[in-house]
Structure formats: structure tokens, C-alpha cells
Length: 277
Ligand SMILES: [Zn+2]
Image 1 (cartoon, rainbow, N blue to C red):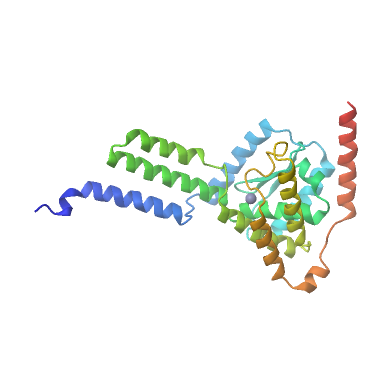
Image 2: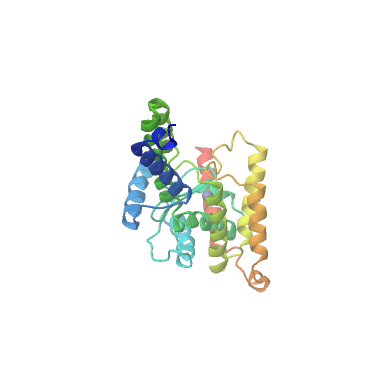
């Protein structure tokens, strides 16, 4: 009788183990990128971003947004990282983080926020993506899936299918964070804004506002937080986290500032001037 061992020669078994190991490491959220490489990667992508998107040339607005970000970064889980924060001159409501401390806030986000704590809420979320190294974790995952797919293709002879799967791993890179990453960014982001003295309910009210905008005008707001859309489930999780905070600290929390009002007025005047042109 032929034993099972003969059906799986040693080379094939090793390959399958390697394939399984790569998939398991990917599922565990392993991060193989060093901090130096992460910063270098962020720097390279930021150059790409700034060659394709218009950075707002307004020192006052940039300095204001940067001051909120630096305040949050100081109380974050990676306070020693250098954070580079800029405003993108577009009305699309969005913000995004790159690996290694690069963070971009769209002008439309400031224009849509009703108070400083709402703006800080979104920025806290983005800073949490940086502190939890979600992008490089995703990068590692994509590479491990690629390894698994390549091994899989070699041992099964499914060359093309394997190659397609490998390509898919690469294509997923930086496209979308997982729901788990989003929940983690909400959780830590909320902690950062609360520690910085902001009213953490700002995150909740802003996400609710986004959800309404998304439901009302889905076609015009397609780009709206497309990489991490707000959902009712996320809002409820944020509410639950806020409920765990000391009610006394909520009473003294900062909701907004006169500086926020001044920046909003400035952007409103600029928008009126643009519409007259
Ligand atoms: Zn996110």
C-alpha cells in the first residue's frame, strides 16, 4: 500500500509549510519594516503625493493644523517620531496618513468641521494609523501573500492563477486599511484627543456628519474617506469608548478655539473669492 508520505514528497511538504507559514505570519499582522525604512518609505510617497496634489500655500492655516497634530503626536504611542503635517488644497473631505509620520489634511476637512475637536478627532485617527504602523504592516502582509502565492503557484503548477494572486497582493498595498485597523485607529485616536485635552465627542460628531453626507450625496462625495468610510458600527464603538472616560474630564474638555473660527473665516473668504473668479 502506498503511504501518504509518498504522495507528498519532502520538497512539496516543505513548500507547503513555507506557504502556510507566510500566510500565518501575514494573518498575525507581522511587521518586517524597520523604523528607518518606514520613514524613508513615507518620505518617498510624500514626494509623490506632493507632485500630484496641490499643497495649500498658506502658512497660517498650515501652522494651525500642524500645531493640533503636534499636540496629539506628543501624547501618542510614538511621541519621538518626527511628524510632517501639511494641508492639501482641495474641497474633498479627507485626510490621510503615510508611513513614518507624514500626515495630510484636506482643506475640505477643515471647512466641514464645526469645531476644533472635530478636526482633532480626524487627525487623531490618522496619527493612530501612523503610531500603529498600519501601512507597513499592510506592506509586510502584501509581501507575505506574494511569497505564499508564488510558492503555491510553483507547487500546484497553477502558474497564471498564482501570479495573479501575487499581483493582487501588490495591488492591495496602501489601498484600504482593514476594519480591524480602522477600529484600532478610532480607539487610539480617541485616546490621543482626550489626552490632549480635546472633547473626544468631536470624533463621534464628525463621523456622524460624514455618514450623513455620504448617505445624502453619494455621487458627489465618492472620495469622502473612501479608504476608511465612517459606519454606524464605528460610531457606536467610539460612543462606547467615550463612555469609559472620566465624565469630569469631559466637562473641562476643549471643544473649539477662537483660532479655529479665524481659520474657518479665512478659508470661507478665500472660497468666496475663488467663486467670483
Ligand atoms: Zn482610517
